[in-house]
Image (cartoon, rainbow, N blue to C red; front, side):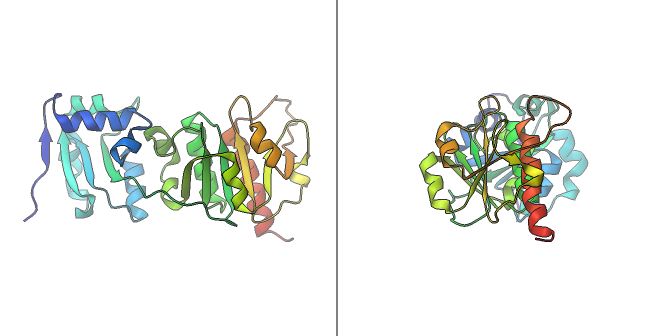
Length: 260
């Protein structure tokens, strides 16, 4: 017989404190070995990709309204008083429910696979957006070099909107590790290389996207085999890295899909 949900009504509850750390600390998943997915859309996206959460956490009013909609596969159910749940959430508008899932096993770098390399990116929204673009345009592997924001942190997961579950993610790499890809490495530049829309792009390849302010670091810049510029007739100094990544990854996908 399946036991009913666990109800938490005290802010001193030990599980509540663990969940709060998981939701607020970008690196807590490394210590706890589990990941916090917040919000109905993100959780359902995970289920559609075969995710098997270890725990489902609901705001009490949300559970009362939606409990019949969720399958048994969501694992242990924890119901938390509305005000206490809002204290867990790291979002401006709390998601009202969340999944806790085991941290996926560390992946190994795969040579020859179309790849995105993140070199020191700090903004969770940018990283999540790039993960979505990678998945959409056929880049199945994402490598995060040391100094890049934690890929499985709650804000990156939120921004990725389920993209994590279709990608192979490898974190905390040194630049030298990318030599094992055995692929051409492409990078954007404001001052060198041909224009992206005129370039012949190799496939498979790896695109390098760098820090929001400093760009691609010297170690990866030295490894780049091709630089390209994105035409900007409007005259802006630079593009947001998430937008630039979407343009570049789409350009690669379009050349593969279209006539050669």
